[in-house]
Image (tube, rainbow over the protein chains, first blue to last red):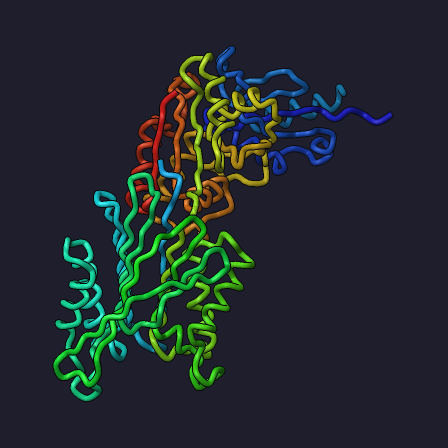
Length: 86
Length: 398
């Protein structure tokens, strides 16, 4: 059976973009290509997470779950975990 | 804003090897008196002498056109002031003046045309040629070997019509080389008609450039004379609306949607939250295009029915920088800023709908770059568009 891909959204709204979101868009440089192949990564003009809990930009959702203050290392770790659990 | 736009532009190259030309074109728009005056003058010979004479003629014609003196009287004054060449016994420079008047709402566009010794102007409605009556006036000047003929005409121009004026460098292109008698008016006419047939909406800038380039190629890419072409084109204005910022209250979202839907022209949405609102209202999906961004410009998105969707403040301030510094579009990297500027420069009237809700996420003191105030940036954009690029702009707050 074919595995469902992990749905990933990176916020590229102004506040997220300037506080690290632009680094996450370079995911090809720091995430394992095998992991990327299992994910469907897309940008999102605003996840509207900043207005709800305000934990800190940049925001990323993985299979619908919101993560705040995501760094490059954190992003790589979250993705490989999500792929493993899928 | 008006629903009719008078698009005037010209293109010019000098005689091969010359750094200064004997063709002079002047254009003034005087919105206070609803008047546009175009003057094309060609000084005898080429180089500095011709330039001085043509400038003199063009400026005289120009100033007189804005004065209450009648055109025929102005033409006489210019003719009597123009020196007559000792050897050749002809006057030193020629001119064509198009004095365009229009009503407050841009209707009833009337052109008064004075032509003296330049090749006769052409008129087109779509790609079809228009012929019209000219009144000939003879003028005998001292020392001149023949009577001078100044031709006057007056006509109305409708939407889709063009008036094309050019110097003898165009009509005589290819003389003795590719064409025994040069390109001549009939050749120019056929070329322009063909071109309009192929590209019915061709702008004045592109059409005048095409005429000049063709003339230059007939001269074997080494122009024998200064080549100048002027195009006046009456058309519908190209409009663009820029929506930036969410409306102050949620109730206004629907009004915003209605305004965007009703707008006839190109549409740009600038701002992440604004894009979400528009996508909700229109029930259209936004997809972010991750292939086109830079470290200082977030990626653009695609949405059906909207020509360009970008991030807000960072993109807008970059656009304002590009406009203010007059950076050529072709030299910009392929980012949303380039697409944004291209659309702006290709528009005549630009309307801003500015949402006034404060974005809390922008108030975070930890943000490493300075995010400007939306109103200030829109103000900068409007000033640059109006003062540098002569666009009409307007704005409203929501």
